[in-house]
Image (cartoon, rainbow, N blue to C red; front, side, top):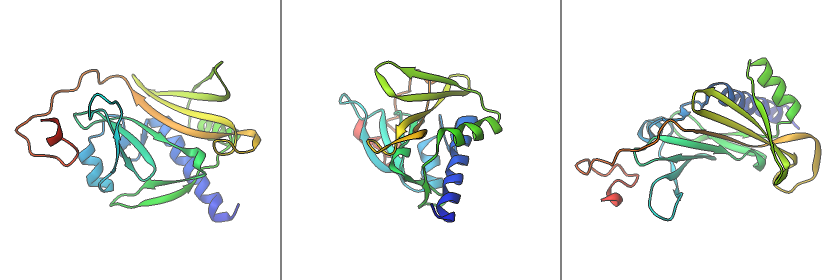
Length: 194
């Protein structure tokens, strides 16, 4: 690993630690309005609907961050696919910055401990090659850092398990108001709902 790659990896570790400690990755946080995020990071790419029954909830992406929004255009969850080896994370004003994402469990837990984070480790019988560090930085807000014993999705096994993906979600937003039909199309599908 070159010094630049090592630095980019530490930068990613700091971003993941921020996510676990605060429930936010910059302005990408639970409940953040889509128009505010688009103004800050540029227009997202359209990831499509989550369910066949309707347009919402709907996925949009900023760089390699996949974010799911409800019909009131509030962020409900996000995913960072760290298994890719590097990620493009959005920058203020548009564009993205590339981060190396290879972070081992020992380095990850040391950074989380240094940041004062506490977590519980969860394993599932039906997914033997995975364990999850779960955080709750606020009431009804969750962050999961999923670890796997191999590089990438199906790469070689490693001794120090690697961060596979990071997830953020919450539960406090039970019902979403119907969009106001008097408002103009916001460019993210309001007109398609009418």
